[in-house]
Structure formats: structure tokens, C-alpha cells
Length: 214
View 1 (cartoon, rainbow, N blue to C red):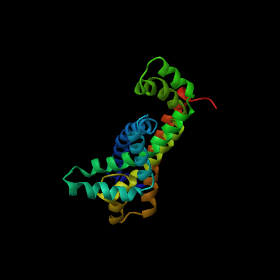
View 2: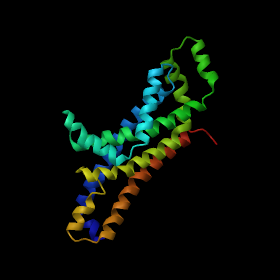
View 3: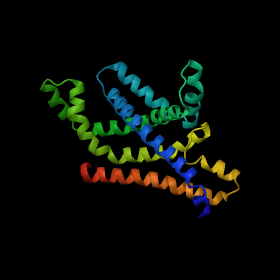
View 4: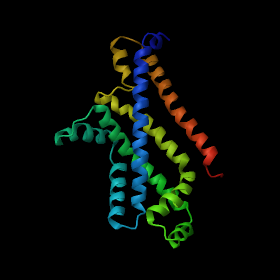
């Protein structure tokens, strides 16, 4: 227990870093993911190609490699930002590919007649998607989106290898101070459980309120 009590501020700082990475990367992933899903079902061919390439590249690229590309590659092109921002970009863009596919699957569950009826009323593609299709698709994609964001929270541990303050990175300092490595990781695991169970509880509430009964 002394591992936690003696280093509570260190664990707290790491937990806060993980929460910040998770929250901001999740927001980015949701916005970009929904946008890419809209691209993939758009009537414009170039948008469909862009969305398809985005998903194929990011889903088939190791996250660690993407971190290297963003944190070490972008500064070579004059893009200089705090490492935490780079980490949020890497996590958010990577996860957006999975959010995109979850949302696109939800869009495919909406009967085709809904879109045809909207277009017959003179609604544009963006109006049909935003006002008719996505609200219905949202109800079916709550569980997979929740699982994806839980995976994002756990993937945030990679950021610690790139000088970003987060929970897993606390083990380095504690190991140097001579604390038990086993208990160090036990408390780190508890921290991740707090984050992931909070996300799970939030999406359980959303599913009970808006999800499609099965």
C-alpha cells in the first residue's frame, strides 16, 4: 500500500494525463470518424476514395509506428507542437478509422427507404445524413463505439514512451526509486480500470436510454 500512499501525487499526475489523452483523443476520433463515415457513403467518388484510403491506411498501420510518424515526422515539416498534442493527434486519428467503420455499419442498418423518402422531399445529402440517417444509426453503434474508446484509453499507454505524462509511465520513476515492480503495476492497473470502467458505465447508460432493444 505504501507504493500508492508514498507516491499518490505521481499516480494522480499520471492518471490525469491518461484521462486527458483519452478525453481529447476520443473527441477527435468521434468527429473525424463520423466525417470519414459520411465520406464513405457520399455520392461524390473522390470523397469515397479519400474515406476508404483513410480507413485502410490507419487500420493497417501499427499504432506505435503512427506515433513515430506524428511525433518525429511532423516536426521535420515545421509542425512543432507539445508532445501531448502530437499524442492526441496520433491516438485520435488512429481510432477514427475504427469509429468510421462502426458508424458506417450503423448507417447500413438504416432502411434504404428512409434516405429515398428524405431525398423525395428535396433534402440534400448532408441534410438526409444529418437529420434522418445518423440519428437512427447512432442508436445501433453505441456498444461498438464504447468498446473502441475503451481500447483507445488502453492504447494511450504508448504515449509514455514519447515523453508524454500518462499512467503507465509512472513505473519508470517508481522502479528507479526501488519500489516493488509488482505493486507498482497493480496500482497502474487499478488506474486503467477506473478509466475504462467509467467509459463502460457511461456507454451502458447511453445504451439503456437510446440503444436499440435486442
